[in-house]
Amino acid sequence: MFWKQLWESHRGRLLGVAAAVFLCPIYLFFGFWNMLFCALLLYVGYTFGKYKDLEQGSFLPWGELKDWLGSRWRLFK
Image: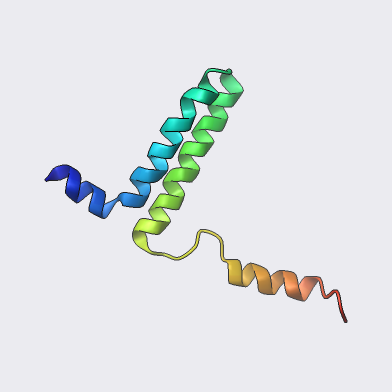
């Protein structure tokens, strides 16, 4: 019951953290700096999962980014 409720409410976070935990031993085996990279992977996985759970849309505002780049780089004036 607890696991099902946890899965339903925090699916994205759990998948993000699980992916990072799966990849971490590979990076931890190779040294300290890679351990820091592993912590970064864990943070990014959790953050993406959190955005998915809260249904806040995309982590990056792709539409705004496209409009900004389009206004900055007008290739065919």
